[in-house]
Length: 286
Image 1: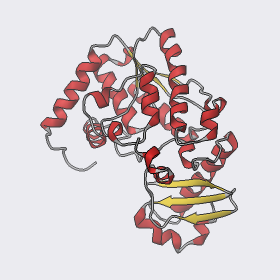
Image 2: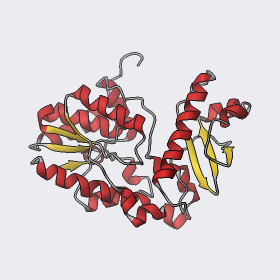
Image 3: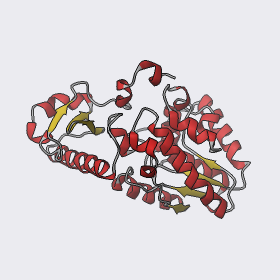
């Protein structure tokens, strides 16, 4: 972090609205994925209620990379909150395995269906997620709808906090994950229509970890890396756009992506949600 963060009255007003919505609660269970949105929300809840009235819950399943779980555990411990690691079983839901465009709806349904009984056992009446104001207007987000239908609510979005707001607040509060890159679940790496399996998720996780390590070893400072399973035993690699040329010039780096018959480098570079580009427009924007 460099320099002081300048005052922002609009952000201050939104943070005040968030604080007000949280202080009204006797306690809260935060669905904590390990990302900056839910991490900032978790920190906001602690600031509003105190650590003893806040519980973080990180769902553990084959779709959560081990490195993400470890980072989530460390962050929650740093805040001093109780951290639950319930197991979810998305792979038992046929709609999730089928991996059509609505896969995220089945994942969020499984998550919230696991979190509500946990909240009940802890005597907590509110389950919240880290959905921000940008997410709710971002087009195709079936998971957001599914969570809302099951009663989980979204304090960040309700307070009007955007993704930029969240990162700015996280920097202001000195949170370790303020500048953490987006890290969607491993299933987001699998092209729609390619069935999701524990083996497929593990293959993507191992390939991505190996590539990131190889890039670091080559002295290439990379922020975003994705290994996408495109089906037919083909992997598509996305890295920061500025590094595409460097990676293209080093075939040995792509050679570290094991487990696929063919590995391709996307010349456009990393794009969050790039799999949605493959959906028909009526589905993508509904």
